[in-house]
Image (tube, rainbow, N blue to C red; front, side, top):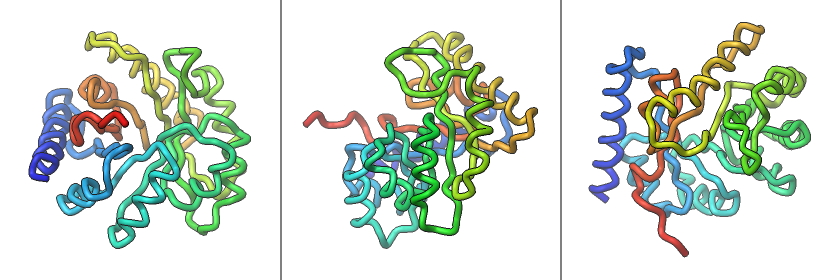
Length: 228
């Protein structure tokens, strides 16, 4: 468990160093610990170390962990693909959703939200235009954002992307710049976004240098997932 704590503190220190290196305002990047396929006990350890935000991809796995950790004031983020038959559980057991890319799903989440507090959402954008990936295309994003506005139980906070894997730092930056530019375009169009959810363990520095406000880190904190 000390390894988990050390990994968390090391990741937070790296974020701080990258902010300084790229002249980003201190403490402007939030860490989302991606805990999918890792046990509730590991999440509890990190929570007791000060980590509040955790991201999950699979509904049933997440609900089980939430039940085990109901004594912890965790902010739960859903970051995986959303199936229609899972929208009720997702809408009512998470505070954030990062993977909105279909209006049908957004409407279901809006209708099924029981809490009076709006659900924080990010539009998932397919910035690399990969056929195997979910997300709206960049040129569709503004129209899609307008479609979300009448949904009063949803609060559009920002954009999320999972770019194609690449090891070259400059290429990583170029991909993230597409989302950062789109973010500014939406805000210039009257939207009040405050969240750029981009960057993972392998490309966290490039994402922060391009304006990320929330990085989703799993492997660097939890280590490699066990293959079942």
